[in-house]
Image 1 (cartoon, rainbow over the protein chains, first blue to last red):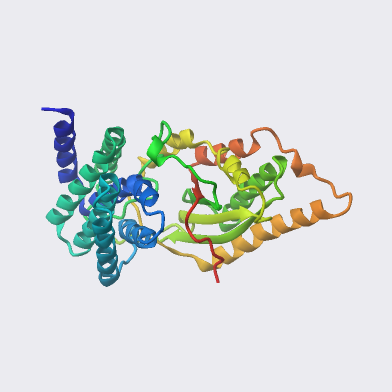
Image 2 (cartoon, each protein chain N blue to C red):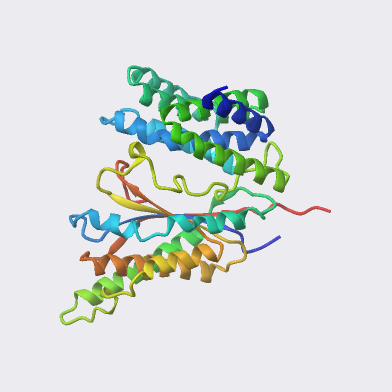
Length: 242
Length: 123
């Protein structure tokens, strides 16, 4: 049995044990890994917005947000068109296929199709791993971590997957194809605060961090920073019934 | 039921002078201690469950207002003739240490460079 077969077998074993929503989370994570490949092919940005919308929709489902089946289906169709368009460039095509599979997995999960969700997830994982063998190592780590969290938390098929479930995308630095090549137009800071923090403390911590970024920017010759957008989501705590 | 839930925040940050060298933004992003995110991941393993996250517009308005006010005040101070620039020489690795201390306190902190998305202002 070669390394690829071993990997595929191990992934199937893990996915089989994952609850439905966690399966979608793994698919989304894999698709997000390889989206840079698709974007570097789609330089005219014909499909980038649809690809981003599809993956954001699938991810929203894993966070427990209500996702419209009709919009998810529409995004799935758009991403399939991206797959058809990129068919002659195998890596871009595999990346589009991964995104397409992730939104299909979400659609199946919304429809309580546990088995079909697993099928799509495994296909997404294999598509993402096919782009770069080094990718497989990280994917396996993600899958194992998710399984561990699911077991320890006693997750059901409908348990939302916390945004903190996965660690850094590339703990040892991104591979060449995922490396940042251009110059940034902006920075997106994403944070999740721990439970038990007051509004005052939360805002104060955010303000201190952005203030520190502003200080650093000025110290290297910049004229300071500004906020374009700021979005906050608060966790809705489950009611405890006795 | 806790009245102090976890919160997720996404902030898109740009340079005050939109024509400034965009590589400065990269330098800011590079100050974040990505490798230390593992610290938080270990802590998150003890979480028993996850709940849905919903938009919190009230807190959003407050946070945006306070942060913008702080940045605007500093910009105004620095722009004044002879204005002091105490923040122009921040502590070495101050940003790194600030982000690291938040991570160790249980925050999830990450920063991405936006290269191709349309960055618009929220209405």
